[in-house]
Image 1 (cartoon, rainbow, N blue to C red):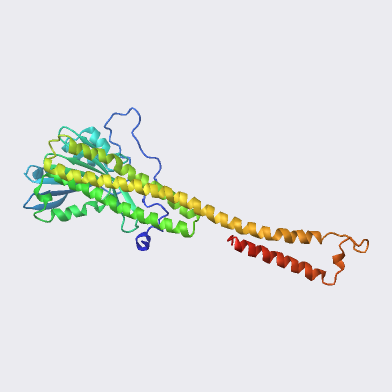
Image 2 (image 1 turned 90 degrees about the vertical axis):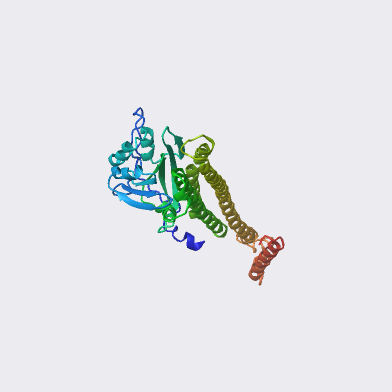
Length: 377
């Protein structure tokens, strides 16, 4: 656990590597629906277009300078995956949108990077919005970005904010002959992309679970204000995870339930597996949220327990000194014993001072013994 969390310590308390870059851009009220405005942060210098063309016999990957170069691949009977990385250049993206005649609402949702996960069916395409979450190998934190997928008759187009290698396993499977990815249609590729994104949720949840366990150990051993900050950061991380997954369940369910010509019955069987994984992720998130709430209660209880221990020690010290203060107060009165035999005659005793000190020692020892017998010490 310590090795897994080593990279997190240098990155504040939250697991999500999210920086605030001022006010988020939004479409103005009353603006034309379908207005494409990039609301995220520029993560690449330029938009990258990678093309993957494949069938059961071959696989070819290349980088395109312009989307028109994909025409010769789209006219063949192969399957084509166009991977677009970078969403900041609206003019460059518009050439892709216009080439495939995408609906303006799809264009708007692709560059609106705070979009909720969803699935929408249009007359000629299926549009899917996902929130990809994966662990950064350098910092040990979680990165979050929007991934949009457009499924056509013989092609799939994916849009990412960055060049995050989340789909690296898909490349390896495309390079292997005989895989379902090479045999099945583009709808299976869409499933594979969605399944990869969902699988990374489990990795993120494992990291959050380790953080929860480490925070719990620290709270039990030494509750301090920094642990409270970690608890609030974990609650925020789980809110991000919950928003990324919750609405996706309904979207996948609609792909399974509805009659969509672009998705075959064979692929719907695999989509049911993704749906099951999403439900598992949601259950894990809810369990982790309950654990984080219990961490707060545990922190307050530990803090209260420590305070009670301190107050108990102080109370015992004060209780011990009450009779001693009483004795000192009595013998601090200035009554002259020569004026009257009733005016504190013990002040004239030869052993008066040692007797007073001995009395205080006996009282102190007796009270400590009494506290010990009562198991207050």
